[in-house]
Image: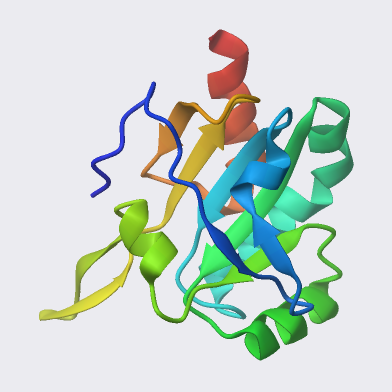
Length: 155
């Protein structure tokens, strides 16, 4: 579970996207960002979540947001994932889990009675100055856009 809270500064990061290009959160200053952490490329829930955000990407851009996805997958895995589904936004590779740990979304998970370390699916909405304004720890993968919209329109 993340220890970051609404009102905290989002931790700065730099990583490689699906094209091997260096991407930094600081380069998004002045723009609102939907930063989502997901467990694994090409899996059903992660595909649903990523496609839902991508299907609404132009609407997000029109509202002044950009979208960034981060998982521990490799650049090559992200490239296949992004190419297959034509994602318009950056997917950052974090195989060393440094960014995941900085955001508190790398932790113990349990499945079928066994414990293991993995990504705790979480989305952060970050404002233009780098402050976290929303955190979603219970992500509705098939309808994440509306989940985010309903929350930010109330605030």
